[in-house]
Length: 383
Ligand SMILES: Nc1nc2c(ncn2[C@@H]2O[C@H](COP(=O)(O)OP(=O)(O)OP(=O)(O)O)[C@@H](O)[C@H]2O)c(=O)[nH]1
Image 1 (tube, rainbow, N blue to C red):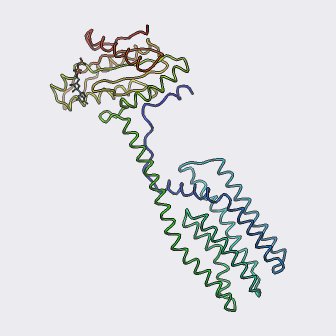
Image 2: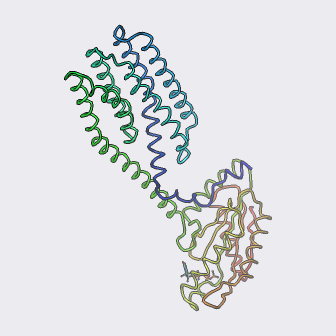
C-alpha cells in the first residue's frame, strides 16, 4: 500500500482555496507565537526587577504574592508555547491555538495591569514613578513583540497601562498628573503607529499568500493539457522519470501504452476542427475512466495519448489496452446531434530500463498496429 502511494500522481493537487481572512489570521497567529516565545521570561525578569526596586516601599508579602502570580502565568504561557512548537500546526489548524494564546496572554497582562495597581504605594511619588516607568518599559517591549496583530498590541498596552494611569489621574499633586498624561499620550500615539505597522504586515501576509496561490495555479497550468484537462507531455515525462526510477528500485515491471486515434484527420476534414477537439476530449475522458489514479495518463501529441502503468507486466498491460480499445470502439462520440465513430490503435511495451527506450518500443508497437489495419493492440516484447 505504501509503495503504491509513493508513485507520483498524474497532476499536482488542486490549487489552494482563494485567499481567505482565516488563513491570513492563521499566519498572523504563527507570527505572534514566533515573536513571543521569550516574552514570558522577559516579563518575569522585569517583574523581579520591579519587586527589587520596590523592596522597602511595598510590603514583602504583597511583592512576593504578585511575583508568584506572574510566575504562574509565565509557566502557563511557556507550557502553551512548548506544546505549540511541538505540534507545529499549519494552515487553518493554527486557529485552534488562538483562544489559548489570548487567554494565557491576558492572564499575564492582567497581572501586570491590575497587579501593579495593587502594589502602587499611595503616598510615595518615587515608588509611583518607578512603577509607571517599568510599566512603560514593558509596554514598549510588547509593542514590538505583538506588532503582527494590532488588536493584541493595543490590548496589551491598555490592559497594562490604563489601570495605573486612571488611578494616577485622581491622585493629588502635579507629578501624578504628569505621569498619567504622559502615559495617555503614549497610548494615543500608539493608536496611529500600530495601525500603519499592522496594516503593512497584514497586506504583506495577504500578498505572499496570493503569490503562493498564483504560483500553484501557474504550475498546474504548465502541466495540464488545455484542451482535455489531463497531464501534458511535459508533466508525463517528469512523472514518467520518477515512476521509472521507482520501478527500477523496487524491481517492478513498468509498461507503457501509446494510444493514437485512427484516421483522425478524416474527422477534422469532414466535420471540422471542433469535432476533432470533441473527439479528443471524449477519448481523454475514457482514459481517465479506464485507468487508476496512480497510472500516469497524458496527451503527449496532437491525437496521441500515453499511459504509464507501474507494477504492471506485459500481459496485464495488453489486457487493459484491449479493454480500452473495445471501450473506444463501442462508445460513439456525441457531436451536435449526431455520433462520430472512433477507433484507436494501441502500442504496448514493457521494459525495466529507461523511459525513452520504453516509449520508443511502445511507439514501434503502435505503428505496427496502424500498419496491420488499425483498431488493434500490438505488444512489443522486451528482447
Ligand atoms: N481537432 C484537432 N485536431 C488536431 C489537434 N492536434 C492535431 N490535430 C490533427 O490531427 C491530425 C492527425 O493526422 P494524422 O497524423 O494524418 O493521423 P490520422 O489521420 O489519425 O491517421 P492515422 O494515425 O494513420 O490513423 C492532423 O490533421 C492534425 O491537424 C487538435 O488539438 N485538435
